[in-house]
Length: 384
Ligand code: 7TS
Image 1 (cartoon, rainbow, N blue to C red):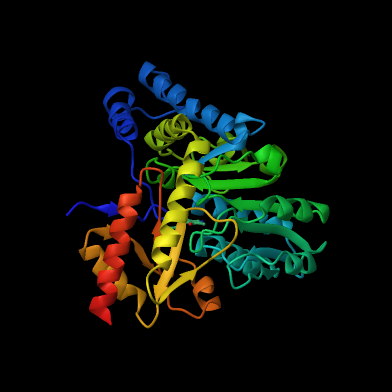
Image 2 (image 1 turned 120 degrees about the vertical axis):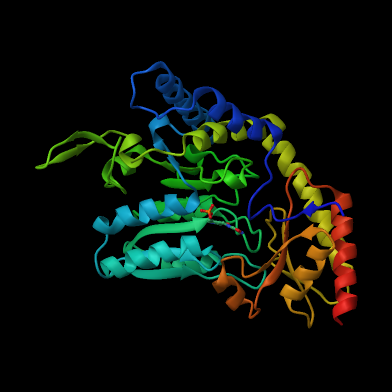
């Protein structure tokens, strides 16, 4: 049976240009960067700085050195949460939302444990939308950083991040945007948003696993301490004292995922070639079609019905455990994710063990959605 891949929120499939670019890197210019003076090393070093520039343009960062290469969103969040240790004191607040992925909860909890700060959580309503009136009540001069996702992985909700950023700045708080689920669908403009940090993962945006980006405003990146010590992040090392390299190298200790960074650039160029407006418009038709077709099934319970959504449909069938449905549709050749999607607090809020999640990308089709609907109906018959 042909595979229908509807687990794009977990990771995207890779276009041929990306697969070819990985092979081309290792075949033609593989060498360590910034080190040797030999020609190959210079070629690799130059090639590694090219995607930094294309990503700077892509997200509209002011400076190239505000673009840090990471291993993914998780790395970016931990880097900033770790660096904030010195800025927090007992009684301060860190704020996240009720619909965060675990990777945008746990690092901030660890930060609170280290510093004696407390965690505030922006609640959501039954549609899976953040309640801005509650956010307005929670935010205060004691809030030092707010970290929210641009788009929820479990519900597909597009959050009002511009509102959050402006309100947070009004009380002097920094704002971190977890763009893991947004980057495959939306071209973020970090200057227009005025966010202090924006992170995303390469593997969800048609790029290689182990690649990612952390954007940080220059003033914050200058203030934050290095995250890891090691090679390439120093200016001078003696046993008495080490001084650090400038941006972005201060945050890029050790040998990075060179192929990953270069090929992430290829992936972002590829997506821009397809066009983010085209992607958004097409995926919206998939979302509308899928939502309508799935709602025709008896006992269909959609989880996450926000007015502003991307192409993620989380659902349950009345009286049936999501794992059972997921297992059966998988046997019918359809890859969906089932479970809590690393967002257990979301599942707790809806009082459910998990959901079945179909997440669409621009390469999916309505015929594939029809196949999903048929498979879900079959699974329902078998299980009831
Ligand atoms: N933030 C959000 C909103 C995410 O959806 C994910 C991964 C992460 C952070 C972490 O990204 P990583 O690349 O560092 O692991 N989300 C999912 C998902 O929904 N299914 O698998 C991974």
